[in-house]
Image (cartoon, rainbow, N blue to C red; front, side, top):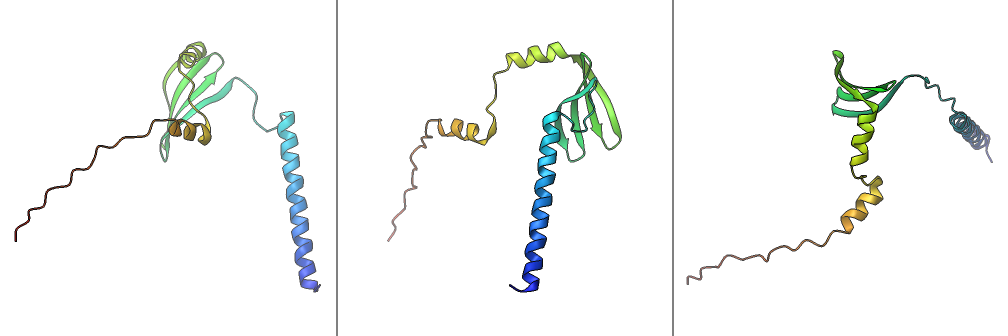
Length: 127
């Protein structure tokens, strides 16, 4: 094997080992809960993008939930409610299918669409 090929293989092996070590370290830190996220009274419950630079957030602050609008100009409090009212509202909603497989199964379970027969226009035979 040429020295160049050996160098390339050694470099690829080194990069692979390093990437694997980073992956294992990340998984280990996630498992023990050391993700760098602050633990405190604030939590983002939901985000609904409206545009490329606009979104609405539901932010939990203790037992209150704030509805916050985010734009390029800044953040605006749009309203607030209690965490219990949000939970009650979600409990009344039927669960939506999650993932592509669930949606595909729902679509495939529908009865086939029956299309009305096509009516061809009559041709005038003038000869």
